[in-house]
Length: 554
Image 1 (cartoon, one colour):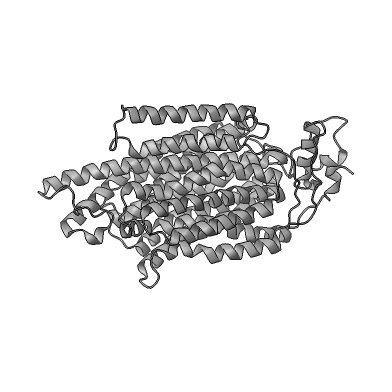
Image 2: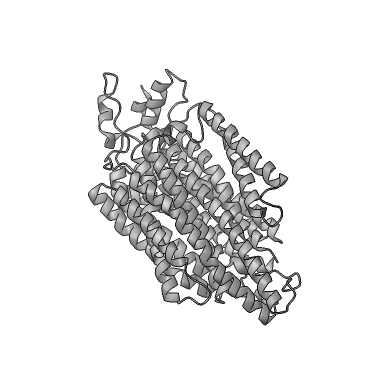
């Protein structure tokens, strides 16, 4: 019996898909909550730990960096191993990282714990998309993207509110911003065990750990350089030469390894395809603009405008409303029309417009203007982010959907990592210069709080507090202008995407020929991993695979 025949073709009903999605959506909720619940509380967290603006940035960057580095590995593993088990492992890593972060005693420990937590977050972000692609055809996926949008909106709206309430509640404290996700993750783990049923195939292959390590090392060195250049050492210095040169060498070596690896973490043959390449460029721009800009909004409201963490969470609702409304509406329209490019293009345009409007804000801008700009940004994210992955999944065979999806997610996270690091460095430099200038003009010591972090406002004199708030409020608009400029690249890439109707089958049609089995012509009847099984064995000329497991989820 062939591999493709050993897996019984099965088309899941709407109810079965919803049951499987229940655990996946809760997993996605947990991953998003880990970032959003911290966003509004982070100024208070870093203030309590007496951290710096650079450390503030790295609490976010560390998670994004490890999530980015691990995403392609998770995606490749999903093409080879049991997807359900991988999701559960990612949840376990996330839980451990959350617990360690909650017990951190200084900013350095918190950054390290968040880095470990990011490995789990990277797995959850990649695997949810991969599993959904394995059970729902692209044409129907638009309607289910509405559920994804609702989950995203709930986490992104509820997270800042919950984080603000926790930080403002004396008997809880900011540490519960990390602990709060643990019980939710455990519930998701149990729910997945009961509801997620998906066949799997195991193939004897090697994971390209060397390529992933080289990519992570090269990107990490560049980000460290961005964080310290211009204040710890100069742009033209031996430190800059060593770090930038070393990063270039590592990334060049990674490209060579990826071009020769039997199972590359980022398959170059997929990346070179037009749709995938343009989706990667758009995702890189969207990720840079979205993560790099939005992560500083909580800081703007609290440090620049003087609102409490809870109030800052409430003030982010317009952005999350934009995500919720447009993701649901666009998802429905995409399922009806079978076209995805117009919505991606419209989303990237709205994203740029929102950031352009945010670029004019200062510490006295009307909240109506800020809210309108945030709604546009959220609307752009809701229409573009998930649909970029959908566009790529629609063009690749099912056996490559894990690597393709994770490649887009990888570059989106990479863009976010670069965005947070670069924009954070720009913000830190502008804030430092502004505070130093205004303190000197007021006849005050330029150290401000005498060694106290400027983010720990309650410990600063009133005069210094006013100077710090004005500096943060006025500098934030500048980084949003940079986000808008980067977002233009996303608009260009979206405009160049090739219009393609969404297929109604789980897998792409096999090549015409006498060897193609008749049963494969109906993609809707193809089992999720059966195509991968037949494709891998034919491509390898009889490569020895382990027996296909037809157990419905382990």
